[in-house]
Image (cartoon, rainbow, N blue to C red; front, side):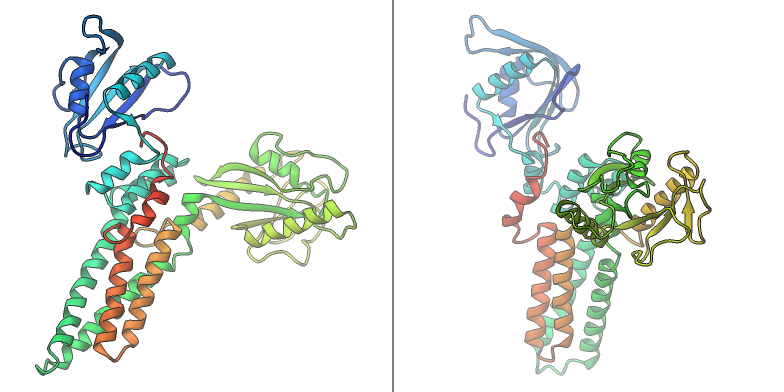
Length: 435
């Protein structure tokens, strides 16, 4: 059987690998209805689960029963992809999945590529590029805060903001074109003043959106907290305590930690990578010196530095904004501005966890309006705002109009309205197969 004109039907598991009771196989594309008729003997009612036998009918005299499964039929355009689509809720045995996949190939379908279902939804106008990226983030969300942010984006919160900007810019460009096309009509000067004012206001809104401290991007990818300090102050013990497992070797021998050790934890509903670094000191040991160099690198690039010491006062070269921790408070109190703990005895650890969680929340707290979540979005809005700034400085109407058109193109590429073909492989390549 061959598929009708249109997108070739594709299929993939929408559920994860491993032992399970049910495996959901998704199909989409022209010819899905014929595939279901061959497998099930007919089409179920749209969007209603129906228990059907799935048959391979290569030999019509002796068809082979593959499985008994729940089948759902989603005729386009009212489907995820906008195409005719279906789901087969199979028993999850590997032999069942393989047999059904072989039957689908024999009926003209092919295995889907990563992100191909969502790419088809984008191509068919079911979502824009920003919403598609929100779905990818929703699949990857580890915490409730990440889930909320990704769900807002996939539901179009960011897209509505960007589409609103595009609509306003489109009107302003039309007014600018009128000033270019009718220079001899003695148009009131108030028209140009109003246009420039509205253009400046739009640019200011974009700049405010950019000046958010990267909070949405930090929440999406997670934060990095580097634990630094002199040798033997308890950095590795602290990492193990916060991770609640023996992730780092603990020894009384100074210089045990030579390379950075990373552990993923959740603090304040934000994913945080804790990095245990080599003790900071002068050393002639080549390997330890490299560990110190890497520790200083992490200090420079971390979202937060946890500066640990065990004496009466913190070291002089503590990074700005660091959380100060005085370990071994059983041997002496913590100075002002430092959190006193004893990793060995567990003293002060609840207070420390609360302080770290509060810092994580502060670094990712949402500001007014939906947050930027990706470097691609930031680059596109920076380009748009830059063109608007240039337009505002232009005295020649024709030159101003050209920069406004460039701003429209940059904003259009953000949501996928124009010129994004070169981005699609990158965007949808991030998805799992089956989405």
